[in-house]
Image 1 (cartoon, helix red, strand yellow):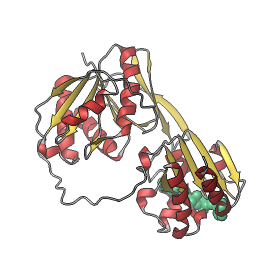
Image 2 (cartoon, helix red, strand yellow; image 1 turned 120 degrees about the vertical axis):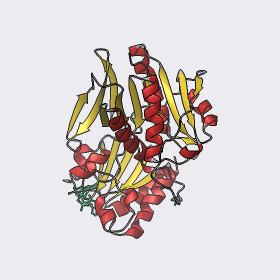
Image 3 (cartoon, protein in one colour; image 1 turned 30 degrees about the vertical axis):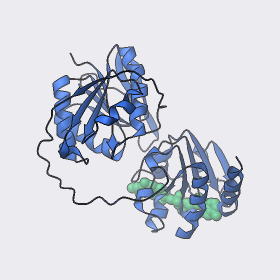
Length: 322
Ligand code: FAD
C-alpha cells in the first residue's frame, strides 16, 4: 500500500527554496494525522550538504539523488529522477511548491505516473482519512476543495507563503539513491541571471506592485524605494508590462505570476479579475488608488483613496522611521 507524504525539496544553486520548508512544516501535521512518514526528495548535483537545512524542518527521511547530469533543472532529467523514485518507494502523496519549476515538474511527473494532480493550491487538510486540497478556480472567483481518492500518489502544487515555515529539527535518515537522469533532450547552453537584491516575486513576504496609474517606467523608482525600505519585491499589472515599463517577469496575474505574500501593496491598479487571479490569496492587501470606486478596494483589507504620487513617498518616509 502506498505510504508516505513526500515533499519535493526544490533547490537552486545550493539554496533550498523557502516554499519547501513551508510544505515540510505543514506536511508534518498531515503526515501525523494520517499516521504516515514525512519525507523530502532532494535532486541535483553536490546537494548532499543541503540535507542539514532540510532536517531542520522535521522530515523522517530525505531521499537524495545526486547526479552530475542534474546540476541544472531540466524537465527530462528531473522528471526521470523523481518518477523513478516514486515508482520505487510508492509514496501516498507528493507535494511541490507552485513555482516555475514545481509547475513544470509536477505536470510531467503526474503524466508519467498517470496520477492525479491538483495545481495552485492554497490549503491542505486531512478529511475522512485522506488529503484534501483547497484551490481557487475561475480566476479566483470560486474556491473548491478537491481530493484524488483513487490516485496514488496524490500530487499537488501549493503556492509559496500558504503555510508558515516552522523549524522542527529532527535527525532525518538520509537515503542516497543511485538513479540515472535518463535521456535529457534539453541542452542548457547559457544561464542569464537577473541581478537583483530584492526577493524573488513568488517567494516574497511583501510585494509592492504598480499598474497603469504609475504613468511611466521612471515612476517605478517610487515603488523600488518603498520596496527597499520594507524588504519587498516589486510587481506590476499587465497594463504596466504591456506598456513596456517593466519586464514580463514582474507581471502578477492570470498570465503572469501567482503570488501569495503576507502583504501586497497595489499602487495605481484597478483590480481587474485577471490581476486578482494572481494575488487575491495575499494575507493582507493594501490598495492605493485615486478612484474610490476601483474594484481593487473590494478585495483590499486597507484602502487609501488618493494620488499615489503623494501617498507612496509619505509611506516610504514613515516606514523608514519604524
Ligand atoms: P487600469 O485598469 O487602467 O487601472 C489603472 C488604475 O490606476 C485605475 O484604477 C486608476 O484609478 C488608477 N490611477 C491612475 N492614476 C493614479 C494615481 N495618480 N494615483 C492612484 N491611482 C491612480 N492583468 C494583469 O494585471 N495580470 C494578468 O496576468 C493579466 N492577464 C490577462 C489575461 C487576459 C486573457 C486578459 C484578457 C487580460 C489580462 N490582464 C491581466 C489585463 C487586465 O484585464 C487589466 O487590463 C489590467 O490588469 C489593468 O491593469 P491596471 O489595473 O494597471 O490598469
